[in-house]
Image 1 (cartoon, rainbow, N blue to C red):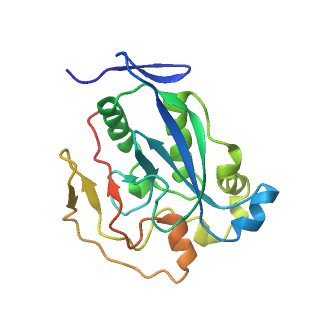
Image 2: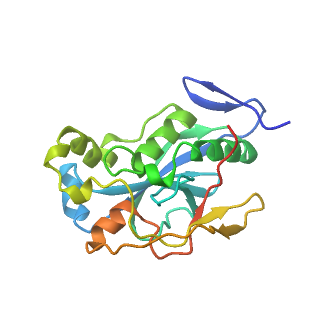
Length: 216
């Protein structure tokens, strides 16, 4: 029998008696300019959800497969760690949480990533709501909310939906090992390095493993 969990207004709960695990939001700066704009309530941020000693985020790639990735806490490559916020607690055990995050991975494919409508902060907000019943602070994803209101005024480079150049896609297997994708792809250069980092925090690193999709 697989692990079971129930859902309520306070988030997902295990059906077994177990110790609560803290759910933490790790926030990163995408640009050093945040050091100045942060105090005015504005900035460009990446965020990841830390549960059971691992951090989970959402990034873009060209395939209709999981874009949910796993890294060591507060160590997401390509970003500048800023701070962490406690979002609450979940009593899902490790095996139950793994089943949960693999199920979520099927909803967050890499080729559906969009900076304004479905980015890493939308992902962490969704996970926080499901696990704790609480949302992440609004300022973390303020850029996307503003962009949704005035997308017609945004540069086209900020409205693209997928990354044009990516590292080799790796998927986390059942035994915890990584397997490279056999899919081939063409690569197109992007002149703006910051645009590439906004859309793909995974560029040029071997420290990231994509979470395998579970059966729903």
